Length: 358
Image (cartoon, rainbow, N blue to C red; front, side):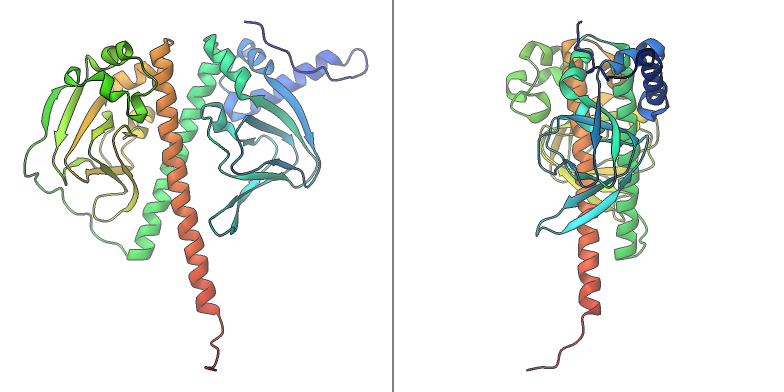
């Protein structure tokens, strides 16, 4: 598949090849591309567009459409986020070898933070459009890069959830996790082929699939009917499957039930329990039915096979998984930022001088 090559950099005769090799060596050291071989690196190099920003330049703003990612070769960039009420919180600095906006390659939602150059900054920009062209062409370079992005997502989601759990303990004090109460009724297992594909397509996870693709996806799966209060899994369990809410609502808790912090309540069409089946670790959250619910089970082996697939349904499935992971991470980060803002507000109130009554 033909792709536009990066704009040529004007350099003295005889220096073009060393410059190209230097760029390949630099990208090979970036963790996102470190698993690529020489041929795969050259594919990635086709997407690289050099950029150069001076100090004070706003690279991207929170809320604007994400068009790609930036890999820094030199310089420093400050990330910050605006909360409701226009309060701004600095998130951290990115230096040489760091990456900005990498999740925009697998998610098209607006930027969740802003980035500004603190000094003269150079590097390479990778646009969503050309990255998607290579993905559609099944290039190994893109498949490996997306696999690495998923691993980074899982790592960050685990870290954010752990921080939420620690925040809950710091705020409420340590409590012993509640034992799993025996359900009033045992979960009922049935075949997912009984579901109506045309109705499922109204739900977020299934909306991109055709009726025939959904029938193929559902044929070997099972669904569970669970009662309110039933624990589907606990933090520390093995990640044997992921799930999709078909009906009802599932509460996601950072840590064990009864001693963790609520991360989310997921209604119909939402994926959950993804991280452990994807990265092979133990569960980092617990999930409890908030009301009588029906959930679709996707076993770990089937999940991993679908993520490796190169068919149109497999691509749609992977997009849904990426979207669910990013939404979970954004939700956890929003909660942490809100808790941080409330903590600072309480501290300011505590330190405020007492004024005499008028």
